Picture 1 (cartoon, rainbow, N blue to C red):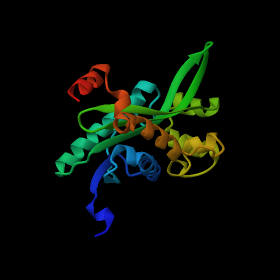
Picture 2 (cartoon, rainbow, N blue to C red):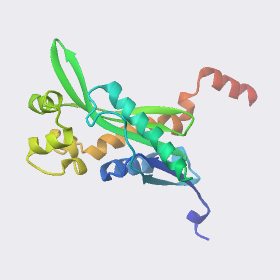
Picture 3 (tube, rainbow, N blue to C red):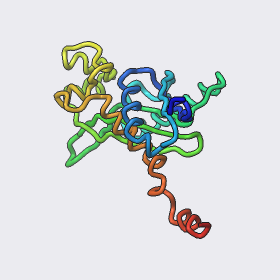
Length: 209
């Protein structure tokens, strides 16, 4: 009997079927698999669901809400077909607008929300600043970022490749990499649970032991 055949399967569902997002979660899961479920094979699969937010979120709050609502919609969608997963991942990319010294700064961010159906946690990629022309096209003219970045870069289908992240970082950071980082961070309370247990929980465990 092969060793893999006796391992359990830990299913990670992603609220998207887009290649960069699925690649991001698979790469993240491969890195923390032994910390999360050393006795299981991680299976990552996607299902397309709606975020419930605008096509290009324009605030951190909207990005977080979109990621969470994708994960929640994913749970509902899988339950409707009598399917399930151990973890549900919602990913959302968009913009965050801030003002520094009275100057508008617009940042591209990727957010992840991970839940096991009971607890949920967020993770973020960090941010990269948009050129004013690109920011204006999205914020002032209402153009979807995926369309605006194609026009800005003079290419087609950027969203399914390096993404705006790749265009802006000269391909040092691709879209999938931004979501990989966000996913890895959002999973941290699950694969590094000891660091996130409350002092009371640790004290109770010590007493029980």
